[in-house]
Structure formats: C-alpha cells, structure tokens
Image 1 (cartoon, helix red, strand yellow):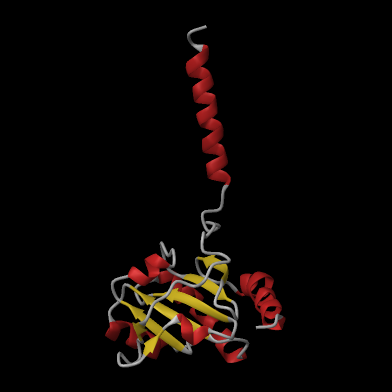
Image 2 (image 1 turned 180 degrees about the horizontal axis):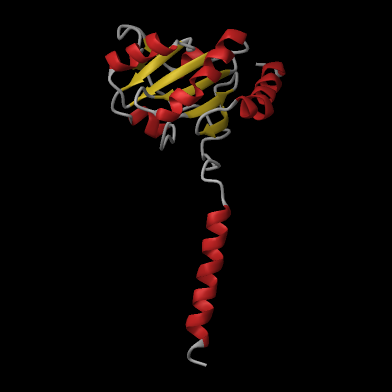
Length: 176
C-alpha cells in the first residue's frame, strides 16, 4: 500500500509530461489578442529622426514583423516577406529587436527591405510590451488598432496562404 502513493504520483507526472510534450511551442497564446497594440514611439531603422508608432497603423490592416539581423530564422522567412511586399496586399511594418542600427540597415540593404517602415527597438522594451519572447514574431493588426493574430516563428508560404492572408482579407472587408 505504501508503494501505491508514489506510483500514483509518478503516473500523474508522466501524464502531465506527455501532454506537455505533445503541445506545439509555436502556438503560445497571446494575452494581447483582441486588445489594442501596445503604445510606443520609436525611431525608425532607416532614419533616427523619423518615428514609428501604432498611430501610423490606424485605419488599415497591417502586419507587424519583429525581426533582427542576428536572427537566423528571420533570414529564413525574409524571402516570404519580400514576396508579400511585392504583392502589395497590405502594409508590412517592422520592429527591429535588440539590434545595432548600422547592422540592421546593412542587413536590409543586403537582403532587401520589405517594410513600409521599421522601428528600432534597441533595448527590446517595446518588444517585451508586445509579448515578444523570440524573433521572428508577426502580428496582424486590424483597422481599429487591435491585435487579431500572433504568429511565432518564421512565416512560411503555407502559413501565409492558409492562415494570415485569409484573416487579412476578412479584416480588410470589415468597416473601419
């Protein structure tokens, strides 16, 4: 009988471990879904004299992509973002996270710049306010400035076609 209690505790722990291992770590729910995009006003990567804030997004459906020059996965998703920008479906804004301005500028010059504008978040505080825990992460913001979707990890062409673009089209059809 005294061995049954530790065995039962062990069995419960194994069940919780199995459940945890079956979850997709990229599907971390964001508490910001349905809430206004967190306020910020940051200098832009291209020109420190110009700023970017969520006020620049108002009245339009936009994608906000959190990226960094040191991020390997950002380089992986970059061709997808460049292709999306060429399609001119919606504005694509960047949030350059914990980077060096000159390195970020060089990275965009080397690989291409898909962004309408990109904010420079050198210390990462704005990213933290957005719930970013790694890059890349991408947010869909609606016309009212509400976060409607968060994608963690690199965007693939499949994810773009299956999830993001259908949501964007639906949000674009809604009245402002």
